Image 1: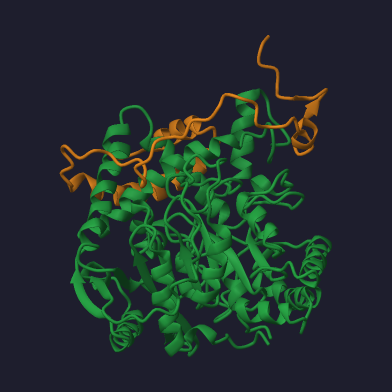
Image 2: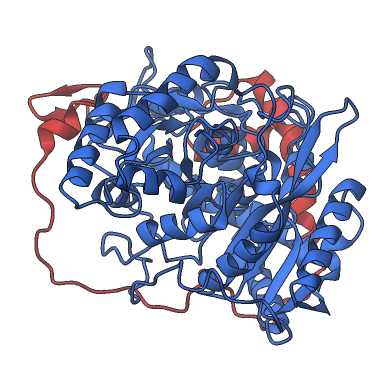
Length: 489
Length: 95
């Protein structure tokens, strides 16, 4: 049962084959057994979770269930949830109890879904390995000595270890897609503005976007129907007609023009990843896709641009953590300035501090034009690359990450090496486009483990339904997405 | 472009983060690496390119100037580090 999709579990709930309380308890039992090692969840609240499951059962009994009613979902601990401890992976918020619900939490509640618990993450979503979490690193279920990716590493590991039926993530530079790739699941970052940022603890506001992490594209389509929609509480939320993201799932792919950016297959891409991605593309040819060679010439610049803009926005966003209204306050301090400086020094971890400092530096007098404005100008060039590319193709494909999951500790002390993990994902955030990762096979590690490889699919603005169609078609003819790691039975 | 430990301390002060001398030295090495990465931007000619602050070309929405929040002072202050009489407590700032 643990390997069933949201769709299948939903059908079992609707037909009363199982109750939400039973299903939820099954996952809670698995968490009890496996989470002490995997560490995918930071906070559990079984009473709250089971009360929601009970409520879902009453909705189902009354015939008021919808697609996700009664299904247990892991919520990334970046989303504020009323009455739930919400830490964002930081000591700064170790004791923070959410006083309200994030938009995404409200939407899942309204759909009758069950909040199974808050998943682990890199501190303030800053990281690509989940090693910066104050609450400890997360194991990759495919090889426990390796990282699950990040920053939504807890969500990815939870879905991969079948500790929940699906989970939510957020993606500022690849934080949904890269862990989905490293853990062998499907993850989608929507077009910027489709999902509300209300109640999602801000990292880089012009890039942050939440999205689904699940076992299949069909499940992600069901979640997208819940996650997306206008929210007047987010000033960048887009007021568009509601869409049904399942509508095009079964469309044939004949004639689909797939663009392959040469920069995504150049130096830096692991041979094992390239092999799996090329095999996936061959499969798409069999499904009727036409391959078009394209170029995204400014790809390499996306990393420097991102490491100016994201820290700049973060240094501003994280100035709210001052030890006054909420969050950590130092025990001993002198005057107000000393209280700020000590509270922030104690509350933030090393990577978060580094990014705040970079941000403060690039925004400081004398450097603003050379760094911040320059980065915004190149951001436009990067967005224009995609605009040009989409004149030649319907969809872009390539690897999600340059390598499979790496060993814990391998890059932890080298920020620049860690940042290069996101070479294929960051440009998508800068342009505000939708991007997703789906499982495209495995590569053997040197110690004989099977490590998942992700295929990235990038769509034009608001083209999520087509991307899900493209992913779903592949998942009808392959079974990478249904495979489970060993040792999680 | 090249930073020294004193620069780190100055930036850290701007960011309201206390750093010890030892931390400043360690941070200097890491930040120098990151700024080296960022420096790649300078090779690009960006003359005349309009900076892109946002991916969607939309303007900020306006709304009626009316109260939309309800008073939840007690709830919000229940998670504050120090409050008294409905006020947030901080060290004395006016002598």
